[in-house]
Length: 114
Image (cartoon, rainbow, N blue to C red):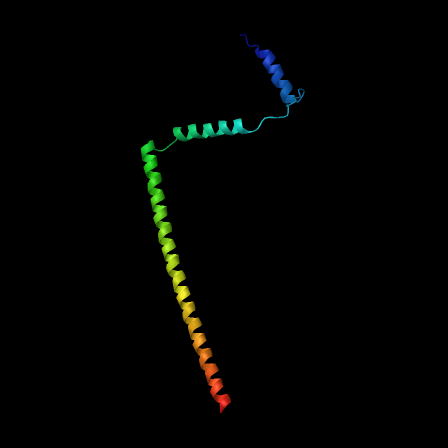
């Protein structure tokens, strides 16, 4: 196949100067093929630029997942302990308020009878 460089340059100049107008047909297909191509490209680049071997990477991911799980579990337990303290304090305050109301009510009953 013979490449005519002069013809290619003339076409490029015409495109650059705006003398040539391209009609781009409307797309009727879905974006699924483009998505699959992008996904495949991402997988290939991920494999090419992965910092370690597959076993090492899986081990690192598992270790990080375990650490995050343990951290979340510890924070959840701490939250539960603090919530229980708040509930206990609330119960104590309600109990004290009820006792004070009972004393006030019983005190007003004895003074009104006299």
